[in-house]
Image (cartoon, rainbow, N blue to C red; front, side, top):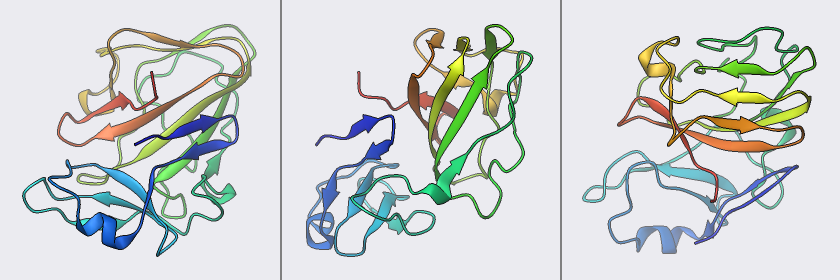
Length: 180
C-alpha cells in the first residue's frame, strides 16, 4: 500500500468496504480512505478484533486533507514545549490536520505537541511555512511524556518542508508517519 505526501496534503491508501472487511489482522491505528463512504477510517480495535471507525469530518476530493482541517497558528517566536496553539484539537478540527507553522525570528525547537484525548488516533501534517528551521526534539524531557516525539533522532524541518506525525496511542507519543 502506498500513500503520497505533497505540499497540498496527504493521499491515503484507498479501499472499498468489502476490501476492508477482508483485511487479515489489520493493526491498531491502520488508516485508509474508504471509497464507498468517502471517509477516512481507522482501526481502533486490534488484529484479532478489528473495529473500523470513521475519522473526523468528511474529507472531500480524492482523499486529501480538506481546508476544514487546516490550522495556521501565529509565528513560533520561541522554543516550544507542549505546543498547543489556539484551535488545536478543538471540536471543530478533524483528526487529520495540516498545521502550517513558521519561525521568522531564528531557528526554533519543538519538544512536543499537545496529545489528543485518550484513545483518539490523530494524524498531523506539520509543515514549515517558511522562514527558519523548526527542529522536532526526540523524546525531550522539556515536554510532558504524552506530548513528546518518539523519533529515531531529532528531525529538522527546513523552509517549505513537512512531516506526517501520528499519535501512537500504545506508546503515548507522536511518531513519524512520513514515507521514508
